[in-house]
Length: 267
Image (tube, rainbow, N blue to C red; front, side):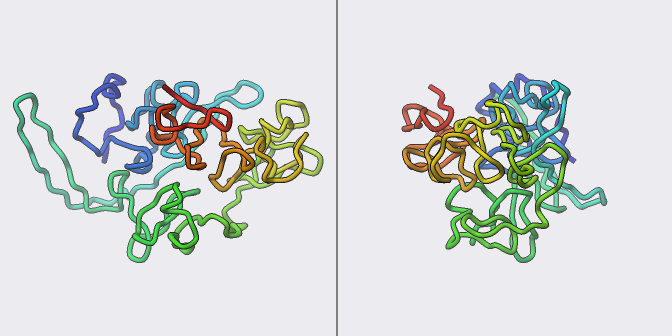
């Protein structure tokens, strides 16, 4: 099993070779209920897990606060098998340190996030590409690149069985608010401006103020698209110059063309 109790300082080490601890778009979901930090490392500290520290809830669990300020768990969980498995260990030496990598022959971990026939279904909300990998970009999710039997596909009607009914919650995983209520960008139903203003509202899951149609560029889209005349990205994600939402440097860096009017950006 992967030990997720990493020191926060590991996030600063760009030379770390142990990809068992990595997570994010290029690596997948953390195993063993770990949190994925903004730097792309799995762990269980506040630096990894708190939403305000930009924990990546698409790649592990995160801790947020509900509308009453109470701590709640959000994000996705990757289930792992508890049965004993055969493993092999390889040691590699360098001038600086000796690192140990373990190859586990059990179900795929975040470093080997396969899907499709012989592998199974992607985690909740993920798309399975035609090449058998789980991800969130157009290469994984477009209908001509996607395996609908093993994950989400864009522009396809979602299965009703994937929606979990939780009182007061709304959005992709929870469904729509009751009639007359708005679904905020954080996934809660309400009726104030914090829930209903077009730039804070998910139009697919409730009422929204001041929009003409679902393609108004002030509205948060649910299909990963963004930009002028298209829509905004959800909380914590960036709109790339090509009009797709994501949270890696290719989406978020200003130098890469991040569109700050339609999502978050970083220098």
